[in-house]
Length: 201
Ligand code: SF4
Image (cartoon, rainbow, N blue to C red):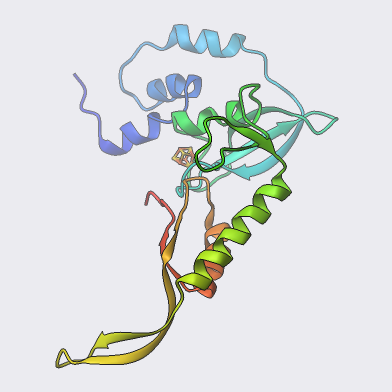
């Protein structure tokens, strides 16, 4: 059997139908006639093409978001002009359309009060105010202006630290570069030092 290089594998492992064609193009010796026929029979959705970036991870593969005349998203595909991904998307990126246009997606804030056994629906404004109030309350109650820090000989020296260990920020894979930048500015401005952004590179 023909040896597959890591580069060839990575090149063909992204995407679904496009992958089938790419496998053959990469010279892996697989008969993709059936998959090609199926891909050619699929209707191509036409609309305004808006270049975007996959929201899932920090690789940042390029996408094209197709929108109709009303601005509704009708399709999301890999962007062949992206120097990073050259039109390919991994299975997660290839499923981005289902992330956006999904009837099961929650679009309302759900809140469960401490000790409660049920969820309540709240407005986004209410939730933002609640988070802001709790951050302020927790920070005010646990702010460290000074702390004993060991010097080079291990002797404790009082130093101004202006931090709090009582709040942590846990990010997600959909937080992009710009969001991460402003987010860490906000966190560090508040004196929060436990910041995790879940970047996967
Ligand atoms: S999730 Fe997949 S498609 Fe999206 S940026 Fe990461 S590697 Fe690319």
